[in-house]
Amino acid sequence: MSAAAAVLLARADRIAAATDQPGTITRLYGRAGLRRARAEVAGWMRLAGLETRIDGVGNLTGCWPGDAAGPPLVIGSHIDTVPNGGRYDGVLGVLAGLAAAERLARSGRRLACPLHVVAFVEEEGARFGTSFLGSRGWLGMADPADERLVDSNGVTLAEAVADFAGPDAGFARPPGDYLEVHIEQGPVLDAAGLPLGVVDSIIGQTRAVIRLEGAAGHAGTVPMDHRRDALGAAAEIVLEVERLARRTRGLLATVGELAVPGGVGNVVPGAAVASLDVRHADDDVRRTATETIRSVALDLAGRRRIAIEFELLSEVAATPLEPRLTDALRRAAEATTGASVPTVSSGAGHDGVIVARVAPVGMLFVRCAAGISHSPDEAVGVDDVAAALATLDLFIDGYGPTA
Ligand code: HGY
Ligand code: MN
Ligand code: MN
Image (cartoon, rainbow, N blue to C red):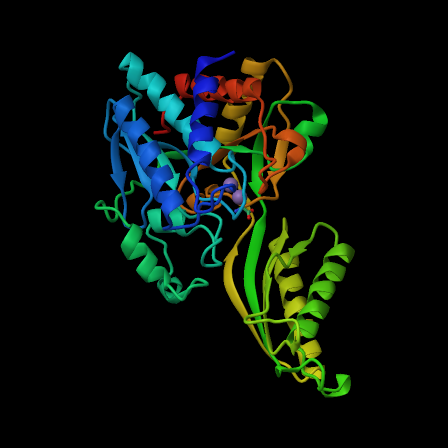
């Protein structure tokens, strides 16, 4: 078994213990678990001889110099999680980049360009509802409107950033190339019995929030035909979202959160808040579906005499990745595993979708058990991790920044 793979898995276990909620793997932006995970990774980076930087959003970068200054080869992913998430989503990619840098540092070898390993600190959007705050901040693309976003405790994003930012505000070099190693989070590799895949595109996604306001009332006295039940309207919207997605080929639409602020069993819900996540490989289909959901929700709320606010939180276009990097990763993976290396389109979003706005992006997928992710049951095999690390090393050994 590869020692580097064993080290990576042990480190992933150690990072899994850095959590906001003991007994789960939960690391939300700016909270204690993420701070601890970032410190762990920074310590390993410094031990390896990398110079570390923490930027104005709190992202951590470990820098290994190259023979020349130039735009770095960046290997990155995220270390935040969804609530009660898994131990490899994001973390695998950061630790794989660290392992690659450690190998260079141990031999004192330098590439023609610097190598940066980046741990983005907010990809999931779990605390403020809008995703990729880390990679957008890293590239100086943070949307000022986001600063007014408020979490469930009334803390604004601006306050959270001020508390979690590092001293190296604005530290980021537009990458020469960007690579991300990530668990597939889907069933393709597991079903094919293959350890590795490469990614040709990342699906587009829309995030929105639907706020509904009716009238609270006594559950025992308000007649059914007098009610303005906000949760009843929300429930109907959830089913309409599901119906639309089921009848539209390739459309994925999810209401992952449904809250009844102050809800209690003997009160007719006066308010309800629902999240909305809409995805499709074709941006036009995704946008049309989002608009359909919006108009169905408004119509339905009107019939129920419910006030409704449909707020778009973020939108990311479907993103093709760089064929030059995809081909190089595929060749390295085939040479490493001797197995075929399928090309997969990613239904999950990744920081690469943001970085692709300024640099070529390549992604290597690693099989995860039954494609399970965003769950404590997320699992990878040590041999697959070893194959991914060996593939990354082979890629790096043949890497020369494009002129
Ligand atoms: O939601 C996603 O696709 C990713 O896990 N953030
Ligand atoms: Mn995720
Ligand atoms: Mn991820």
